[in-house]
Length: 211
Image (cartoon, rainbow, N blue to C red; front, top):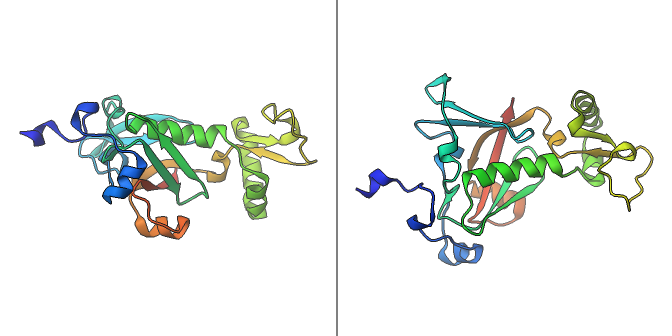
């Protein structure tokens, strides 16, 4: 009978919410909610990390729209936990997702959007990009003013910081260019160890695809 209820139901009545230390002590292995891995039989959620736009359709019929809201408060992972970290194959960052009552699917989407739309590429990160990639980002910025531009004219540049002549101020989503649609979130210990030097039980790996 418990299988009919399902293990991904929202709420605190279906299992404890573990802290990061608990996960390490228990040697827990994460299972990602199938709505985030494109493995759910009834819904495929389409999420754009750059705009925050979310839609959903049936996996077997792209023209059949499905409401994604019934899944938004489900736990993002099992065991339910307070903190998840997300690495992206297409960027250098590690995105933290936190909720003391348990990280949900909606928390993942919100954190990814806020991180890429409201945070900025640092000067060192920008300088590490090949000139061709920098030029492409500049062209994208002309088409989309939300990406950013010259730091000297950016209203979001801190008042106490005097930017260098020609300095840039681009949102992190610019780094992704056109690869902004979530393809999947998964546990990938080998990739995690390659990037971080260790295998974390609450570290997930994100793959993005072009919109």
